[in-house]
Amino acid sequence: MKSPKSFGYGSKKKTAETALVTVVIVWVCMLILMPLYGIVKEACTSGLFSGLISITRPDALHSFYLTLMLTVGAVVVNTFFGIVLAIVLVRQEFKGKLALNGLIDLPFAVSPIVAGFMFITLYGPYGWIGSLFEAHGVKIIYAFPGMMIATLFVTFPFVVREVVPVLREYGVEQEEAAFVLGATKWQTFWKVTLPSIKWGLVYGITLTVARSIGEFGAVMVVSGAIINKTQTATLFTHQQFTNFDYSGAFAAAVVLASVSFITLVIMQYIQKRK
Amino acid sequence: MSINVHTISKKFDAFLAVDNVSFDVEKGELVSLLGPSGCGKSTILRIIAGLEQPDTGSVFLNGRNVNSLSARDRRVGFVFQHYALFKHMTVGENIGFALSLLKIPKRQIAERVAYLVDLVKLHGYEKHYPDQLSGGQRQRVALARSLAAEPGILLLDEPFGALDLKVRESLAGWLRQMHDKLDVTSIFVTHDQNEAMDISDKIIVINKGHIEQTGTARRVYENPQNKFVASFIGNINSIDATVRKDGIFVKGTDCRVGDSPACRDAKEDTVLLVRPEDIVINQNSSGLSATITSIRYKGSFMELGLKFNGTIVKAIDFSKREWHTDQKVSINFKMFKLFEKPGTLNGEIYENMDTIYN
Image (cartoon, rainbow over all chains, first blue to last red; front, side, top):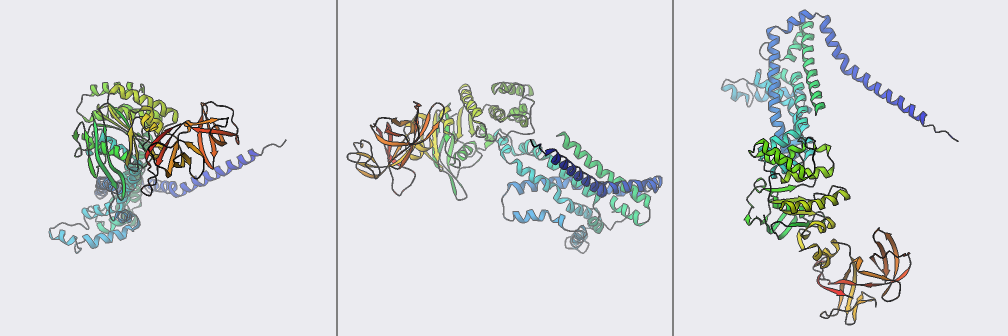
């Protein structure tokens, strides 16, 4: 009688699996966890107290406030237009749909710095649209409106890209059912469509939040990073770093990283609950 | 509510999905729209519901033209093929949806939902989500949901298409009972002839967007108006034949299958259609001589393949005698239909039918 050698194969398979898991864990640690640990450790060793003082100065607080405003604005506007665009892209047939679909990804493809320059040429004091506003005393570039536009631009694709596949998969049957059961279009949207795309939307919003907080290049170009005026938290962090205020830079970095981290944790928690 | 469909047509781009269709459904009737997939039967149903607009023609509900009425104002119950349940709502919330849109007290909604849950035998599942139910249970939820606002009309789009045979059969029977109990006018779309024959008062056979025949199950089975109906409803053998003064012959042979019809002239090209159960098999030699080519045991009957004069036909034998392949037997056609070929007009639709009894 021959004994089967399957156990040999089994243990080999097990070794391979363990190796694979190890590689993945080491890679994630090196790439993500270690840098995170690095800034926390640096913030602690370079002086917790002086760091705390740095990030509670009026200019620091103003920068956090500005980041908050930009983030809220980006979430509100992108949620609205993201849903509308996703519905149009999935449900409507029209000429130029393919081109529109491609354009949506443009902010992913264009370097944020380049995007910033695009806005300066358009909305700057001598720009095509900017000069019109300037004539009425409204500043766009080197002011909040410009920063808002830049943030909207870089975060634009997230909600659309997350909602489109969900909407496509879910089809129109449930909406037709609601309609036949007597729901108006508006009722159908609130009671049937929105709950169905909820998770895609939550994920898109999370990514929008994270990107709004972290955006550097485009906002830097259009804001001019004026202290107490147009400096966001990320720009503040960068400035403290270039000014050799390491404790302040790392303290601000820890705050920003924590916010991003908490956002992700909340999202994971919500998704688990569904 | 009665339903009158009057000369409706609908095109999708260049494709003519519904071609000048008219029919009437009396109050309280259960009518099947039966046809192969893609024949336009679902589109007709969606036009009645108001989910599609016809290009021409009108739909009347209770005598009233509803063309300008949107789906939400037609008060029609619609059951979708893939249930279309609201996934984020419980069974109870799904069933109560139509009522929750109206300004009805919560307690009243709860009472109605409880009644409907009872009606579709889903007691104890009110708090479940659609994902937690089997296909048959989901379809019952969909049915209860469509009945919640007491529609006068119930439209069912292949409601059992995605279910197992056993579940399908029991649900179909149950649907018929439900229909009788609620006294609602129903139209049922299906591609399954057994289902249609099982439960409907009237069958409307549809092919390529137009109506081929309307009638009771018995009528469309026993008196098909053309070859399409004959072959779509039940099995049928089609044999090319020639009518001469001295009888009907299998084309190109001297194989006589019956007397020629009295009022019919001799004709070279005709088609003979015979149901498998109308072929009688004998072991003596009175009739056409044939050879058994295949034998399938089907439980309550046997299905035999028989070859005669180069033609193979299918026959059903309830006697369940011990047949074997290559056995020589003789066969008779108890009854068959004779159609004239309409020539080049349309290859599939044969008209001018005679029924021949032997």
